[in-house]
Length: 246
Image: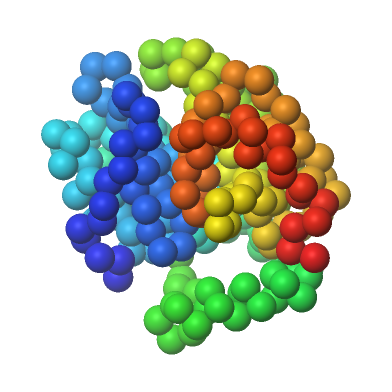
């Protein structure tokens, strides 16, 4: 079970990072005292997310939307209990919906030696050295390239960015210059890197470069590592995704 009291870090006027050991969650303030969550963390994270909402002055029913950037357990793990507790609408990339609902098994990445070593490290930190079981959950709104999200008070572009998973998505908010890249972009030791464990490395690198080329981005809300809030453009320009995790 994830610890209930988890630090909240405000990244912009409307975005907070709720960090976890594996897979950060982001909360976004919506007009009219509502909130959206981008990803849900590992199984057992729901109480900490609800507690964070309470610290922001919101009850469970204020969570109106949950957007899943992709189907991996550290992003989808607490979606089912959060939906049950809040009644939030669940949105996710259309091509990942069968994996989120449990209709099909997820495709597995072929890890590089560096990724295999990282996986050993991650599993060593999990209770029992194994991934917990998550509940399948229904997706209310499948998202596709070019879709926009309603109710955020500004334009939110949905970008289909496959490679990490077949149906991975990113959210781009041009007016506030915020990007939620899913696991395509991570931060390690002050560097921007391609996220590990991709089902299609070539497509993941292409998707990474697409996101890195966006001009109107100052804040990158990465799910792993520290957020990019200063010098994001320079850090993205300096990235070398083709060399990461080799």
